Length: 150
Image (cartoon, rainbow, N blue to C red; front, top):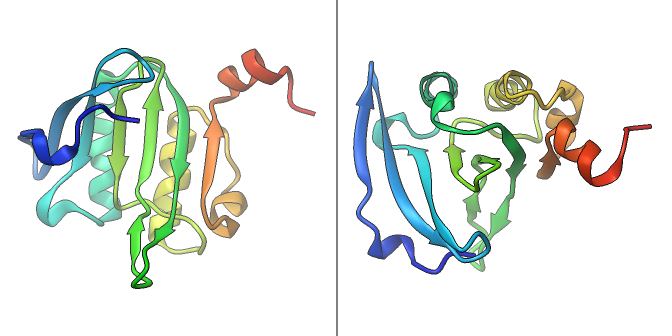
């Protein structure tokens, strides 16, 4: 997916209000150009209200989000590797929020529902609470690709 590995990238560490995030640029082969990625960072990782606040603070840096996903991968040692909520805009830029999750009715899943609805995905909380992982298209993107929902 990316032409460069994260190890070779020097992220810019930023602070807005009382939370910290990192921003870096990667060359994305599928887009044929560089995109930026914003992720929560440090002590703010994994805290739902910090992820919601980061979304609110940086959402204007992005075009309309077209894809939202949570992918849960388990490595050979049975350790969960990646379960961030990843929002991808029309230009391929990404927002990674580690305080958002799915698969249960806790605060992480509730944060996911709140952010997805604010981003225009119009999703029911039961979907997030019951999903082990998901990839969603924004309703406007879905109409362009597949037509109206039934």
